[in-house]
Image (cartoon, rainbow, N blue to C red; front, top):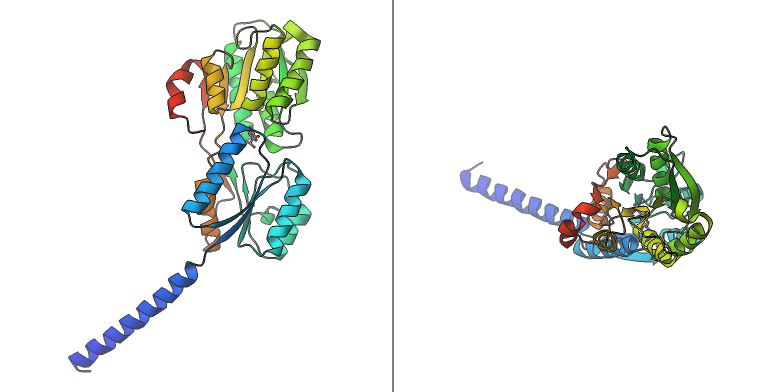
Length: 322
Ligand code: GYE
């Protein structure tokens, strides 16, 4: 081939490749539709989580179909079925409770729609029913709280009576924050859980349950172990109305580390707040894109978190994002 002919041939091949590449990226650029079923709007954590999911979908150019289950599993099952019927590209959801997901997730699998779990895990034998689970390690959070209690009471003989405000019955954070605590305190008989009831992760629920605890146990309670800040804030109101000083007469242990939790720590009413980040949106959108692109994802993506004692609250609050 002469030089000029070779050059022309080269240019033609190059042009063909460019066309092919642009066809490919066009196909790759098709907007992804994500169906997301949220638990509800029960807490400050949840509100921050919803904002995170919505803004990061927008930033990622993902078309989001958002559905609020009002803390009912049946509503989530309906939402997932409707996402399947709409043939969304990916389904993500934060499961209200751990059990009972096999039937609807099998329907999604049969429809070849990948499912990503965020925030709360589920209890299924067949883990191929979901691609990955993005969220906190609630068991470790419970252990962290337990270790704080051990340290706090290491020089006291006890008994140390704990009143527990549980989250939503059957939810992963309620199950695991309880189990994590038990794992740490079970070998130390001075710690006793004298009362345990669900306040459904809401402020009103926490207040109501604490009113009943205060009536029955009064000054016997040494520790209030609230599974989230909203319930801790409700319990603080109930204690104050019952003449008990939260943070002083009673140690208040809480989870989430929201701004509301920090303000209560600064006021001396929550003694320790175990962090749980709701800002899962960006990681979720990356996972959604990766799944659509056919990439292999790790089965578990764990969020980075820490523990904030009351003493650091004033210094840290200005940096808190939720
Ligand atoms: O701790 C609580 C919310 O699932 C981690 O749900 C979440 C929990 C969070 O209502 O505030």
